Image (tube, rainbow, N blue to C red; front, top):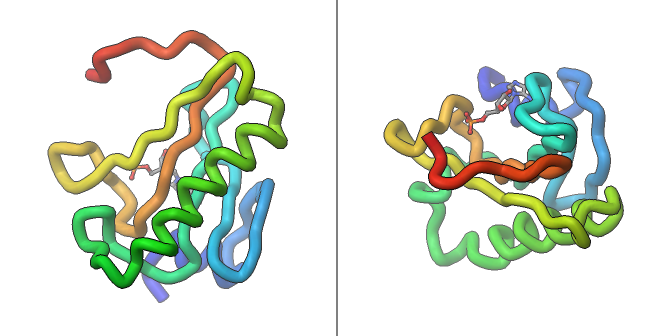
Length: 113
Ligand code: AMP
């Protein structure tokens, strides 16, 4: 299995997991870009948001709801946070398994670079 996030989902590579269930997984990013930087992935491999299909909409909702729930559990919901899905080349996606970044813990600039 070559996909690094599939390998994390199957427990083949360690990760600092903050939440998991049958459908989704949330773990700390290896190279955090903010004091809180968590990734939320579907266990099922999807290349990207662009590659997802209407049949994945419930799963996409689970990814977003997990961002919300993890933000609440980590105590960052009140101050605010950013959820980002880098998608494709121009979107800056470097890992080809759909993931949402949850960033928080400092004021985040806008627009992104
Ligand atoms: P993106 O550039 O949007 O595709 O984001 C990929 C993210 O995955 C980057 O923030 C990386 O630091 C992160 N990443 C890559 N490998 C791992 C890993 N083994 N564990 C945790 N985060 C990782």
